[in-house]
Image (cartoon, rainbow, N blue to C red; front, side):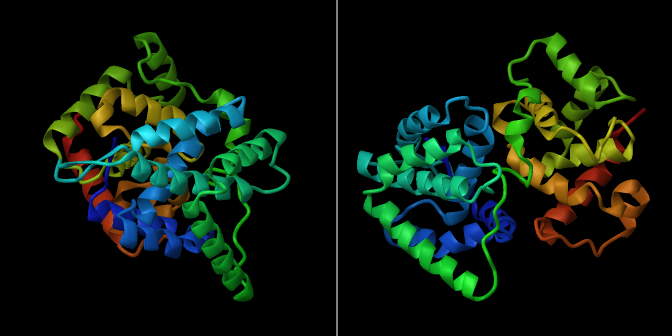
Length: 319
């Protein structure tokens, strides 16, 4: 079963993904399926694709085999929708299959959009495996034809679809062996990960601080919790805030926050990469005084909430 995002979260994701011409080329066709057949929204479909590409697919040694397993698991995942109000909508096997085809088609396009120099035999075989599963499906055919038409229109307008690695412009496969799986980690493993990220605060102090903020503050969305990363930067707690390994930080935080508040690496990484080099990050004073921050991946509403959360955290922290 999949939990559907509320309208505010969908709007935030849509604004974030609009920077991707590949997403924009698929958007009209995905929106049509949502409107006519009750499919997931384009933003949620794209989010599903990013989560799977950034997680299980990137770390697979036999990618084509992982694709087969993903196809099966997606049909189970989409057998029911959990609405934002808590209502459960059960779906037929045919409906679940159609949604799975939408996501798998987006995964396929994402793999094909990878730069040639980074493409491998493994990823090429994965594309072939996806096409074996969905190429003859009417939903895939609809998305393929619509995307190609939209892509041609973009190219005629001088806006080529970007060729980039799977996640955030970084060839994550080169560093996947450095990513440690901290979920369910032992206390010693958590300390090891924490010590690789922080220098002037202990894990116990950090956990206590996070617990207090979670109990006394209101976070509208999971991604709002990136404020913890901002706070750590302002306090000079991080060893290298501009070069931090997001995977390790997200895994560490998810151990503290628990499943219901779990953050996705792709979401944190996208926003952190956009903010980490900005001048306002150098001090709390600049964060408080600067109101004209603009970013292609960060909405004004998100930045406003981020500032409010960081200000509250500074008030709550007692050295």
